[in-house]
Structure formats: structure tokens, C-alpha cells
Image (cartoon, rainbow, N blue to C red; front, side, top):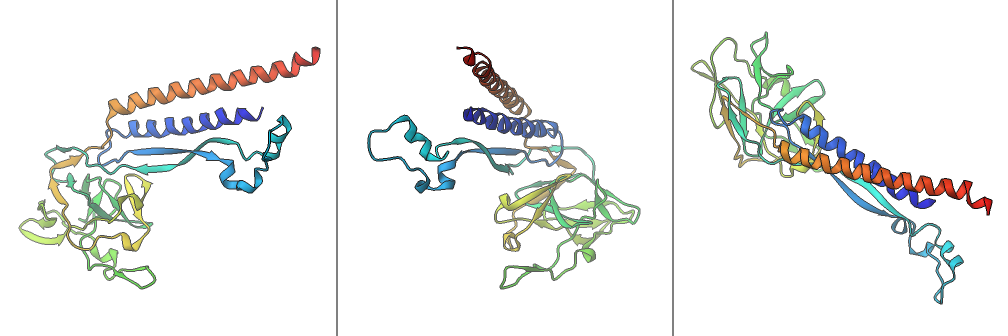
Amino acid sequence: MREIWVPISGAIAQQRNVEQIANNVANANTPGFKKDKIVFKEYLAALEKGAEDVDLPQRDWKPEDFYRSNGSEDSFVKVDGTYTMHEQGQLTPTGNSFDFALNGQGFFEVLTPQGVRYSRKGNFTINAEGKLVTDQGHPILSKGAPPVINPDGSMQLTSPPESRQITVGNNKLAISLDGEVFAGNNKVADLAVVEFNDLHQLKKEGNSLFVNTDAKNYKIGNNKTSVHQGFVEQSNVNAVSEMSQLINANRNFESIQRVIKTYDQISSKAVNEIPKF
């Protein structure tokens, strides 16, 4: 009953698919959220073991010849990974001067206890120290000198992130489309809006935060992202489409369960009834 592992692998893959779609639906109203897609592939044992392990004779085959393949003919479904879709979400006006939305491929630069992270979620506020922070309390950073890329590919920061926190105090906050930050009538900083060469290299860390692990992925200059005050970027999740996919994934999962149940019934008959003959 080796074949039962094929539908079992499909059931595991569909369960992962259901969980991923459900997470997208749950975050349909989360500002700046980017939906994820899961990727499957067919796993072929022959590709891992090599053709030399398939020892079938070059003649008319007998049934026992097929046992000499050592399982190299086996194949099943395998989760290949997930990727984030970074399409622009809709900009919705809120009238709140502490809400900011990005139009373009850029990210806000945020200082967290784990280091510098990047986010599209622009629900900001002012903390007790008068600094501009996220709804999680992480400081928003201003522009610094471009990082230096060493010959070994590592990145050397020329402006420590701790020194780039934006202090507004009790003054009226205003930010231009180019990211100029004004406290009252005085310009206090230029908002750090970072773009990347390959968005798919960014890794999600939860709470709408991303981490960049490749120093060469930073795009230097030619930043085309604009900042819109009084707006929030909605998630790029189409709730209707995702619900339709969720229903289909659940139906596929139920179909695979029926296949597994059928295999179980066949196995039960083979054990309990065939010996009677």
C-alpha cells in the first residue's frame, strides 16, 4: 500500500494551502499587508536517487523486474515554499495626520529591538518622548548616508540607526510627498523610504515587518516612492477571490480524504477477507 503516501502528501499540501489562504483572509483589513502564495511541486524519487538506481533490463519485462527500481519511480506532492506578492494596495483617505501611505515600491525604515526592519504599515503616533513611532512603538527612522558595501558583500552602516530617530514633540506634524518631515514650520528630518532591487528577497517577520538579508539588495538612488499623509494603504488581498480559493482548497482536501479512506478500506479487506479464501 505504498501508493497511500501520494494522497497523504496531497492532503498535507492542501492543509498548508488552506492555512495560507486563511491567513490572507484574516489580514484583509490590515493596512499595508501583502498576501502570500504557496508553491507546490512534484517530488520525483528518481531525481534524488539517480538513474543508475533504476535497474530495469533491456528486454521484455516480467513483473518481478519492477522491484529492481528500488522505489525510484515514486512521486508525490511537495510544498516548495511560499512567496509574498508585493502589488500596490489601494490608498484610502482617513483624515488622520498620523496616517501615512506609500505609493510605489518603497518601505518605511523602522528600528526594532532586533535591528532595522521595513514596513508598509503607516499607522504612526508620537510617544512620550515626542518621537515618531509605529503602532507597535518602534521608532521611524530618517534618511542617513547610503550604506557602504564591502568587497565581501557585507554592509557597513555609516549612520547608526539610533541617531536617526525623528523627534517631533508637541508640534503639528506634516510630511511632504518627498518625505520631508516638518514639526510646526521647521523641517526636522527627511523620512527614510527604502527601495530594493528584488522585493522577493525580503522575509516576513510578523506585525507587517520585513527583514532584508542581502546588503546588495538595497537600491541606491532613483527613489520613486511618494508619501501621502492622511492616507493608509489597504492590504492587497481581494477577500472575495481569497474566499473562493479557500472553498476550493477545502473541497480538494475533502476529496483527498475520501481517497485516503478508500485506500484504508482496501487495506482492511486485504487483511481481513483475502486470507479467508
